[in-house]
Amino acid sequence: MATLRINGNEYYYEDHGSKSSPAIVLSPLLYTNTSVYEPIVRMLSDDYRVIIYDHRGAGKSSRPASPDLEHSARDVAELIEKLNVDPCHFVGNCLGAYVGLQLAISRSDLLKSCTLMGVTAEPDSPEEISKMDSYVEDAKKNGMKSGVQAFSEMWFGSTFRATKDPVQVSRREKWLKYVADLKPEELEEAFQIFHRKDVTKELSNIHCSVLVLAGDEDAPANIEAYRRLAKNIRGAEFKTIHHAGYALAIEQPEEVAENIRSFVAKVDRQWAVKTRQPPRETGARP
Image (cartoon, rainbow, N blue to C red; front, side):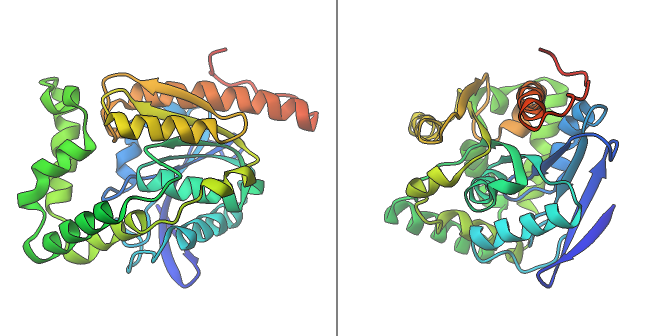
C-alpha cells in the first residue's frame, strides 16, 4: 500500500482500519511478508488501526537485510514515529518477536504493550549458531527446496503438519512454497536471529505491558525459555496457544487474534485510567 524511507532504506507497509482507532503494529515471521497476518488483520481491523510491514530484505522492502536486531528495532521505532502512532501496541512472531523484544528494551516509550511469540532473551549456543549458519549457507548455494521438510518441522507443530483441514492445508502449503522459492539474498535475514546478543540483563528496561504466547507443541526447551522470559519481565503474562508450534500466527491465527484483542483491550483500559482519558469502546471481550 505504501513505503517509508527509513535510515536510507525503503520499508513497505500496509495501514488497515480507522486512523482514529488504537494502533497495533504487526511484525512478520522470518521468511514471510505482510500477508502472513492477513487472517489476524481481518479479525482486528474493525476495532483497531492495524499496521503491518515487511522486514528489510523481505517482501517488498528494500535489501539488504538488517545486520542485527538493534538496527531492525531502530528502524521500526522510526516507522512508528513517522506514522505518528506512538504509543502503540506491538505484536511479533519469530523474527518479529525478536525485533519487538529489542524495541521494548530500547524504546518502551513508544509502546503501550508488546505481544511476543517465539522469542528468548538468551543467545543460542555456539554449536547451534554454527549449525544454523551452515544451514543458511547451504541453502544459499543449493536453494531451500530440499530443506523445506526440515524447516516445516522447526516451524510447525505436529497438529498443523498433519492437518487435512483445507484452510489449514492452504496456509501451510502457501508458506512452505514461499520459503522454497526464496532467493539466496533473502535467506540472510536469519543471521540477525542466530547472532543475537544476550539481553537477559536488559529486561528491566522494559516499561510497557508484555504478553508472551507459546505454542503447546513447540519444543519443551523453547517453552521453558519463553516462561523464563515472561518471569523476568516485570508484570508480564504468559499464555499457551493450543495445537501450535513455533509459527503461532500461521497455525492458529484465530486464537492468537483473540488473545491479542483481549490483552490490548485490557491494556487500553489501564492506560485510560493512568492518563485519565475515557476508554474507547471496541468489540473487545471483557
